[in-house]
Length: 335
Image (cartoon, rainbow, N blue to C red; front, side, top):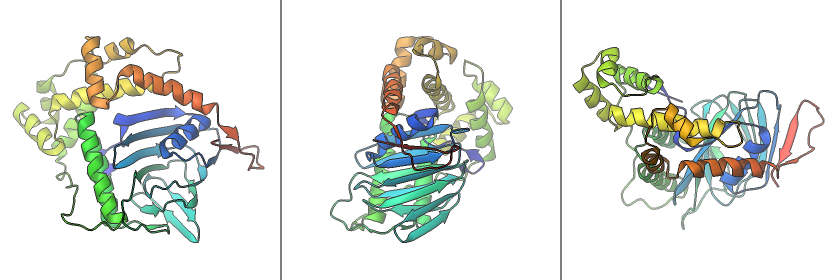
């Protein structure tokens, strides 16, 4: 996804699966949606599933990708959902409604609706599911989302790149849930809720964010970053605060925590060593690292590893669907 010239991967603070095989990815998606009635058909060659999600009392938000052409069949739960295409293209068939969508397009999936989604190999979607619709009515037909609501959801994802803590992430997610409820459930509006868009991104901030995110140095050096970005150290702090809500050092630490999380989930070894990955990103005091990790992600590193092991165990329950006559296609169903 692009905001200004910044490319945000989308909810990577809450990465759950990376480079996942089809069974593990399907099991993870079924776990997030709470609906076991899912079937995935894809070419296993080139499949590289990713899945991130965050849930609050108001809403659950996930960013999903497959890395290969895939078709997903299933029935929605009782929760109304919105889906926005971040990259690639998708075709939705739901009842008598057919929607073809590209990057920046979105659509509504009603409760209990049976649907088929077919996506391109570069497909990446954001899925937002309301936990409840209150007493307000909810449409029973799939439809295209208004540009205004799409903008609200993309604004949330832009902010997600700069979550300062797990509590900050939950607060922003709850606000998104209230916005969705007003749009989708026709809740009477006493005081309209808005997710204010981030200010137009200054080119210098784009440069600073890219430099900090890609910096291979283990120690933060504000003078070096500001010199490379072509700003004074004072402006470095001012512009970062204004455009991201974070100080340069906070963003520096955040990027390293995200990289440790990704490494723990992507490691192919049986028992990833937390200390090794933490030290490789410059976290020398492991007790402080663990506390910082929990503050940022809402869980300790060992809990991330527990999730990784549970995801692999759930994949064992995925069964062949047998709905394809082509030996080149792999069809699986969540039981």
